[in-house]
Image (cartoon, rainbow, N blue to C red; front, side, top):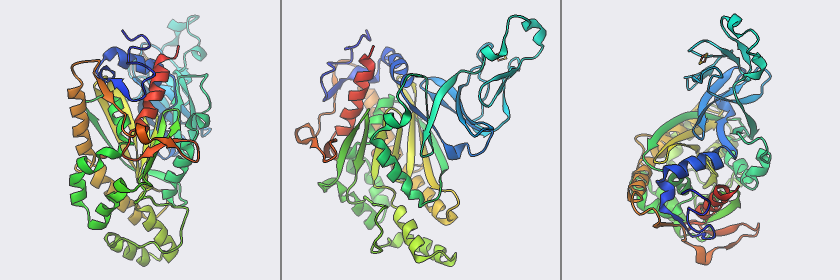
Length: 421
Ligand code: FES
Ligand code: FE
C-alpha cells in the first residue's frame, strides 16, 4: 500500500525503505504529490531566446512545451491536443508562430489559445474555442531559470527557492557579467530511480573512489583540488525545502573577490595567449581564468535541478527504474568564443558521453537499482555525519562535505510531500 507511512517511519531522518526506488505505485504517487505539486525547472531563457522560440520537456510524466510569446512572456503548455490528445509538437526546440496538431489540425497560439479548427460547421453550437486552450502551467523565472508548476496555489517561485537563491546568484557569476547561455546539452538515460541522481549531487563521499579515472586523466594541479575531501571547510548546508549545497573548500573560487594574486594554471596558457592576441585586458583575462574553475560547489534544488561547476543538470523521471539526465554546459552570451569553447571541453571531459566522470557515476546508480530489487523494507542509509551535524552561523544544518546532510534534507521534503493530505 502507498498510504502515508508506507515509506518507513517518517520520523526517521537517517534512512528510507528500499522500495522507494522500485515500487511503481510509489512512483505514481511521487508524480502526483511532488512533480504536480511543486516548482519544477523547465528551461533556461537562453534556450528560448526570441519571440516564437520554444522547447519541449517534461513536468513529471507530462510532456510540455515551453514558449516565449510575442509579448515576451514565458508559457508552459501541456503538449496534448484538446481534441483527442495527440502531442502538438514533436521537436526538441525551434521557432514557430504556434502549434498545429498533426491529427486533425487544430491549431494553437504560443500562449496556448485554440486559434482554429478545420471544417468548423460540425462544431456549430458544441465548441467554444475559448474553452479549449492547451492546459497552461503557472510559469515563473528567477535569474533566467524558468520553472513551472501545475499547482496554482503554491508559494511564489522565489519563496520556494529561498536560501538556494544566494547560491544560484553565485553560480551565475561565472558568466562574468555577460548573460548566461546554454552552450551544449548532453542527455542520457540510466536504469535507476530518479532519487538516486537527486542524492548524488551533494554526495562528496563517492568522489575519490568513483572518479579515480577522472583524477588520473587530469594534471596534478587539478587532481590536487581533490584535497577538499580532507579540508574541514568543505561542508554541506541544508537550505530548506529539500535544497542543499555542497562546498568544496579547496577548489572554491569566490568570484566576488579579485585581489589579482590568483595563479593561472599552466593548462590554460594557450587560452591566455589567445585572449591576449584578441586584445583583452589583463583584468578581463584574469577574470575569465578564475571562472574556468567553475563555482566550487554543487547546489541541489529539489526535486529536479542541480548547479555545479560550469554546468547545470536536470533530471526527468521516466518510470520507477528509468531516469533521463540532461547536462547543460553554460557559457557567456557575447563573451569570448575561446573561453566558451574551453568551458565546453572541460564539461565534455567530465560529463560528456566519452567523459571520465558521469559515465562512472551512472555505473554506480545502475548498481543501486539492481541491488534494491528485492527486500522492499530493507533500508537505504543516509546517516553519515549525523553525529557531527550542527547549525551554521546562518542557521543551516551543516556537516562535512562527505556527509549525507543534503540527502537528509531532500528526504525530509520528500517525506513531507508524500504524506501531506
Ligand atoms: Fe489533435 Fe484531433 S487529436 S486535432
Ligand atoms: Fe560523481
